[in-house]
Amino acid sequence: MLYHLLLPLKDSSFAFNVVRYISFRSAAAMATALLICLFLYPRFIRFLQRKKYGQEIRDDGPETHFSKAGTPTMGGLLILAAIITSTLLWARLDEPRVWMVLSVAVGFTAVGFVDDWNKIARKNTKGLSGKLRLLLEFAISGATIGVGVWMFGVDTAVPVPFFKDVSVELGWGYVAFAAFVITGCANAVNLTDGLDGLAIGPVMTSALTFGVLAYLAGNVNFAEYLAIPYVAGAGELTVMTVTIAGAGMGFLWYNSYPAEIFMGDTGSLPLGGILGTLAVLTHNEILLAIVGAVFVAETLSVIIQVISFKTTGKRVFLMAPIHHHFEKKGWEEPKVIVRFWIISILCALVALMSLKLR
Ligand code: 57M
Image (tube, rainbow, N blue to C red):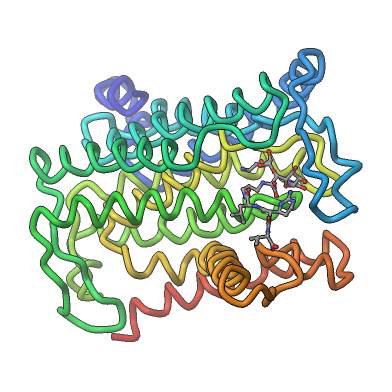
């Protein structure tokens, strides 16, 4: 919004020309989201405590988690408010891809909120039925990408990382594929969100990685030089990705061990949904598996555990998702968290290396 308001003033003062630059607006957007979270979380936490909107803890989980009962949840509401506000302030609003990400963000926040609300109001740990939740997520992401393909020229070919000029053309099948990527990513982040700060760390590294990838894809010279698909307007997504890092840092200030607040499904579903949408719109659908390898590993651990338990009656991990396995092995919670962050940084670097390794 500020781009549209301030740029015309450049004739009266050349200083306003600065809003033309993605780099300036990205820095401002990150600072805005960070400050919103840093200043508003203490009040928000007090509000949630007053309303007694606290986490119910499952009694079959690790014992170290029992003392977390009553920790305020639904903290994701403020993360998303900060991301959306800061994006509306600093991104160019004439770029349809920004609106596509925003629509997934709002839709998935609504689904997550209803789920959390059900848990809080009914005081149980189940929330929305899994099938209904997946259906809603699939519908929201499919509708968004469908409109993108139909009206805004979203490409339907999926590039294969590490190979120059290799891509798979899916036609309209791309919409279902993209919805699967977005919904899968949302649920993978949701599964990861089981220790203090565990999910938000890799969410931030992934968002920043997509920030770089979006910037490069949106610049015709860089895209040509690196032999990646050029995506007109993708540069504006960089402004959005850094708001995730800014809001994430603000949230982590309070969610770091021992957490004063959890993000809830209200946070994990839209954050994962946004990452999936960024991967789709910058055409890094397959690379997402490397950028978000921590989320993939958490999900695979659950799939392996469930299949093994159902077929053989034996567990592969002490408990799934895999972060619980390490807790059960006796690692302190902060150790698991920081090690997973380090792995996620390493994966982000490998993903960035793929730009040159092709
Ligand atoms: C979300 N949510 C946390 C919090 C957070 C299929 C099955 C593997 C599903 C899985 C599951 O339900 N995952 C979804 C995991 C919960 O956190 C809330 O949920 C939000 C995210 N959706 O924001 O509001 C608990 O996680 C802890 N937590 C923190 N710090 C944080 O910053 O400590 C969360 C955020 C919180 C808190 O304790 O209460 C969760 O784990 O419920 N199910 C599981 O993860 C369960 N695994 C399981 O049943 N494994 C079996 C299966 C696969 C065969 C096995 O291995 O034998 C475990 N989860 C729990 N207890 N709590 C095990 C039992």
